[in-house]
Image (cartoon, rainbow, N blue to C red; front, side, top):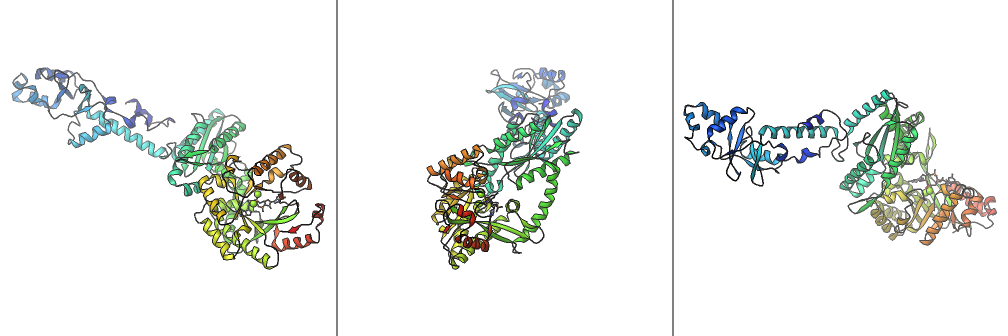
Length: 605
Ligand code: C2E
Ligand code: MG
Ligand code: MG
């Protein structure tokens, strides 16, 4: 017990309150004191107290070593100091001198229970202590002092733990993290080695938390904390800053490559499927890394820089890592400006939709268009959706934007029909946040009913990663949408989890092969192999396939040779405003040069 007190004074990484202190029993506080037989003389007992000044009490036992009472020092010395001290010489029976109501507890009684029993007995023997038995036989005495000390120590541990550890995941919290980071920087100064700080933020955690419940979210955070701890050495620190933010301090790093390697291991580990409460989910994380002393002069500066790197990943691709550089900092300032402007864009009517044709290759027919949002800011000019969509997702504005896009696409559909064009299928990109809203199905149904459009003319583009957040919920929503008559496509296929085993379970109509595989497909064998594999898979599942991002005739010929029947890309037309698309259609009817190369005429479906 005495050695544990030293743990309080230093920041031992392995400190853990769940250790012995939590379950401490009387066994661990036991002090064996030779008992007194009930037949002994009181004078002998007095002698024993005189010889051992630390002794506060002795137990009286019978012939079977069963305790029958406690004799405490003050009691016997009181008798001794009184005129009738002759009682010590056999006049009075020992049973009359001892406390017959002594407290007898089993060795396995916990410290907490012992404290409660003492309190219930009006603090009886808090000072002298109480008798402890093992299997009913006297085993020793525990002093009230030892009990108090154990409880106080435990409380101190708990307070220390509360102040320095995260209560949910039981890993270091922000306070301890800052302390450790400071120490790591000092160490780096001393030994000329590098320290790395990795900021880890789970992607779309809020969505998981909202859709699967907070209990689920908590378990997920605990699992992540374990996984992160598994990725690093004992001497490194894994801490939780709050919410879904974790940090890792790596010490004694020699090369940047080594840090990168660890970052990759962390990402892989986080991505492993997670089965909690019989619900499977997949999470990814965005990692921002800053190095000391390369990027920062102090631990505070290091935190700021790792944070900047992480935010950069968040706003770009997510599920990635990035090492800090000065460029990122400039970019962050730009982001703030962008965010302010974005908040006003809807009310100022700065958004518009562009449309990009989707061509059926066998007959060169226009089968649909994809609606792609554009933001024209009076000062910033045209802002790419790749820039502002992730930002809108982060702030939640994406839901309002998504609603606007669907309404606008519906209006356009109606306009085209009223212009005498055949009804065109319009593909609309759906964000993860919007899709996981509980009233999403209701919203899309209502919007189409308002516009008076048959849902089969609207195709909702979803991404693999948004479905993997909560597989069962996604399948459920997708089934509802299909029952309402909507078409469903998986966008950017192959870039997410490539969860081929899940594909079978998702009720979808179409796969959109991501443009990164289409790019240079005719010259990069790996891309061709991937496209071939995706095509085979889609065909097996009876899905329709479309290749995105076709820019050249070579790419077109190549995907055509793999029996991909639909395509979309700059080769046909860059996304264009509705009126330009109309002219294009018109021009095309008069035979567009590009498409004449494709021999046939392009017909509206
Ligand atoms: P996406 O849904 O995969 O859209 C295809 C992107 O590829 C579009 O970029 C399009 O302009 C571009 N593209 C099409 N053909 C070619 C080609 O031949 N070569 C190249 N290099 N690019 C081509 P865009 O419009 O910048 O949109 C980027 C992403 O932003 C979209 O990827 C989509 O994820 C998102 N997005 C666009 N509009 C919306 C929207 O209304 N709502 C939501 N939630 N996301 C949107
Ligand atoms: Mg799309
Ligand atoms: Mg795409």
